[in-house]
Image (tube, helix red, strand yellow):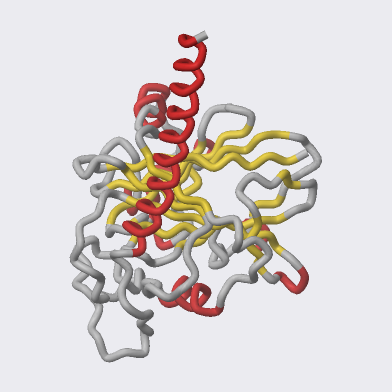
Length: 280
């Protein structure tokens, strides 16, 4: 009897400790992520000069904005927007089951200046890289701290590719988001990706090798996560829309991503996570 009591107490303590860890991760992840946002949004109408572009991609209009000098671990936030009436984008739950004809767009926000990649699979099929895209800014995949980016982009020249539209076939679509402090040498981007697609039109978008894919997937561990369910049904803010168009960071008082992932280790130079999109 005494042994059973001890086991029961141990079980209760274990549950409490696990829940406390989850709660601490949630608070810590969101707080750490937001700590490096600038105090307020900036506009491209300011007199501030753009940073010198070392990659010869002058079309990427990136501003040198004053962001907190804290050096947190890698962080990446995202929100899923459903296309509503009059093309209005409305936040929806990341666990929502979508129906045929639903159209969505995902907005991501990194907390560092780095390089971003997105891979897509359907029912665990072979992955395809959907970002960077050789047709958008010539494959440039550099991202700035706390600037929101759209997947897919509303700037895509093909209007049919500006939203993910679910078809009649039931499936689980997975998007793998990869944020890296430095370019990943085995993945083409910029002019290398443009040349690849010009020379291999039947094999573009680009697809990673099995070894590289397993290496990337193995990095999706040891992440702290924060989820906010209270923002569901909210229309995309004008501030976020402006930040996307002007490529300027969001301020501390702007709306925050629905889901935020943070690396636990400061030494980690990559963050990999996935979004499951279920449609029936």
